[in-house]
Image (tube, rainbow, N blue to C red; front, side, top):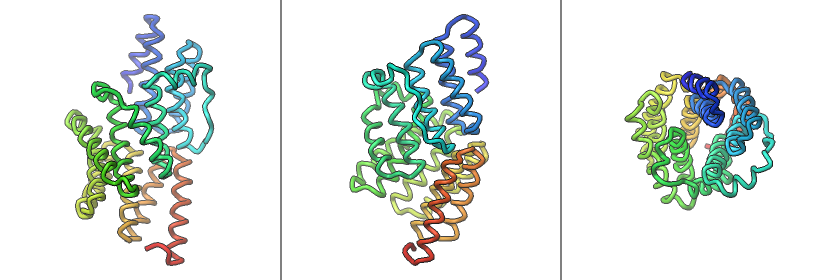
Length: 287
């Protein structure tokens, strides 16, 4: 991330404010992907948007606001961003902006386990995916990761099981190139996709192994947000198996890591689900 700071300084020194704006956006988005503390990231996004607004960069402003909204929702602040006047026109005509919007909506809906919204925004996101060359961008590797996790979840819940499963498998294969280029960054993501695919295939022994590998890899490589997600998805897996002790253990570890990340809104949502689950257990309504 420090290279973005150097690039920004060089762009500003040469008077290239457009390049400086692009670098600022990349620095914010990659900080989010890297699991930087959300409270610190909130300040970075506010400063980035102010920079773009002052220099009249409406497309970058709109794209960055969509990402900012995800950060705020994770923190527990559910508010719409202040849109620039050209925002609606940009969204309607710019496929890149549309893709970012639906990806962010799909991602936050998934994190907060809203099935209908995840499915709706996932379908819209998939229609926005452009030509294959675009998938060489780093951001699209992370999009493939989340699209794969979402697809495997929807495959287990949707009537369109086969279609979503194939989308998940395709996303997993798309990520393979990135794993080969940087195991440090992508190994844990690959393991988590393997776990979710194994879960879909009812290969429970393989799923257990891959969830554990995903958790350990995320921990070793300091991706606290993805360690949290791996614990949470493992919890849902054990919940499906009726293994209460492992379910609670992984939910509580997920909560601990989400809290460390600064995702207070997600923490509240997760605790509410756990309390509801325990209530159903007590009443005998859930295995």
